Amino acid sequence: MRHRVDHRKLGRTSEHRIALLRNLVSSLLEHGRVTTTLAKAKEARRYAEKAITLGKKAIAAADAAGKLHYSRQALSTLNNREAVKRLIGEVAGKYTERKGGYTRIYRAGYRLGDHAEVAILELV
Image 1 (cartoon, rainbow, N blue to C red):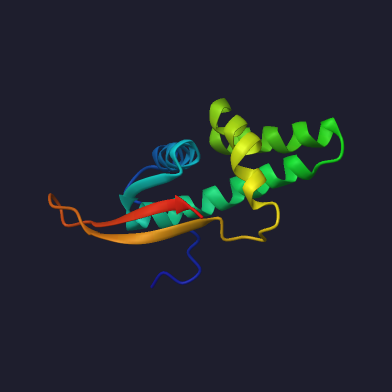
Image 2: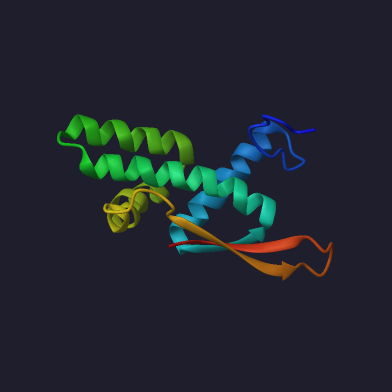
C-alpha cells in the first residue's frame, strides 16, 4: 500500500526526476501548455503551483529585497533564469486575484507506442 507516500517516482532516480519536472515546468511557463503523460503532468502541477505562488509573492513584495528573495527562491526551484523572468514578468501577474489552481490537466487519450495515458497540462 502507498499510504502517506509524498510523490510519484516516475521510474527515475531522484536527480533525473527533479530535472525532468523542472524542465516540464519551465516549458509550461514558456509555452503555456505542455503535452506529457498523466503521471508526469500531475507531478509537474505541484511544482508549477508552487513556482507561480513564489512569483506572486515576488510581485507583491514591498521592497526590493523581498522581490529578490522570492525570485531567488523561484530560481532555485526552476534552475532557469528565462523561465523565472517570464514567471515574474508575465505569468504571475495574471493570477494576483486567484488563490490557487493556476493549472489545468486534460486527459488526451493514449500514446500509440506504449499505450501510456497522455495529458495536456496548461495554465488557466
